[in-house]
Length: 110
Image: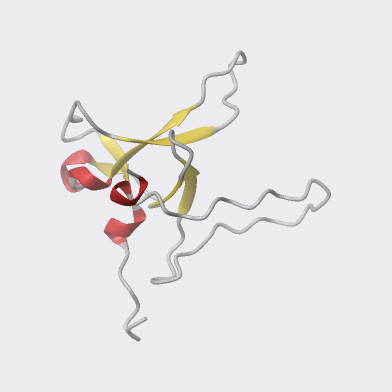
């Protein structure tokens, strides 16, 4: 399931609580673009694009939503990526595309 969904990204490293330096967002090794890496609802990790697009512009296989995990508090503790399946979103409804849909290798052929 993870291979089909493209949820094959490496997990984010746990930050050192004593380190106060800025944590840079990861970049794609193929195209160099910034990506957002999120855990999925089935314990895998997926690289997502940094923008939301209308569902009509994203093929079905690449549609994701970011959902806060339920907690007792009103403040979301963490966010998971959930594949959009079952009920199709409205054409104008925003979804987060998987980065692999938008990944364009650089001109050097790498």
